[in-house]
Structures are given as structure tokens and as C-alpha cells.
Length: 71
Image (cartoon, rainbow, N blue to C red; front, side):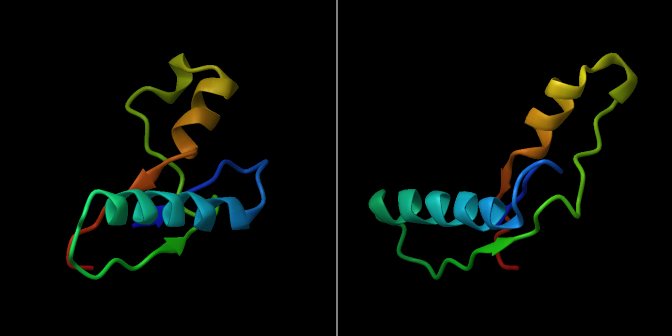
């Protein structure tokens, strides 16, 4: 589980997002091994048409969690 943050957030927020999703998966009974990592704002979300988004909309896209099965 990979957590991301917008540029105005502390990098630790990204890790906290990933841990929260991992905890939820655990609550649901997921039996596999779950690794978490926080990437901060190092990997921006690639919006299709970023010029059409407000700065707040772009920031919301940065505040995300990705699931990468098997690695």
C-alpha cells in the first residue's frame, strides 16, 4: 500500500494514509502480507488535463493511496 501527500503536507502523512488503508484491509480479514510505504509528494498524480483543474483539485488528487499487489 503506497501513500501519497500533496506538497503542503508533511511526508509522514503519506505513510499514515498507507497504514490506515492497511489497517482497514486487516479489519476486513485480508490474510496476506501487507507492506506500507509513504512517498510524500515525490510522485505527483498525472492528471489528463491538469490545466483544467484548480490548485485545490490538483492537491486532492495528490492525497491518495495506491494498492500495488505483489510489489
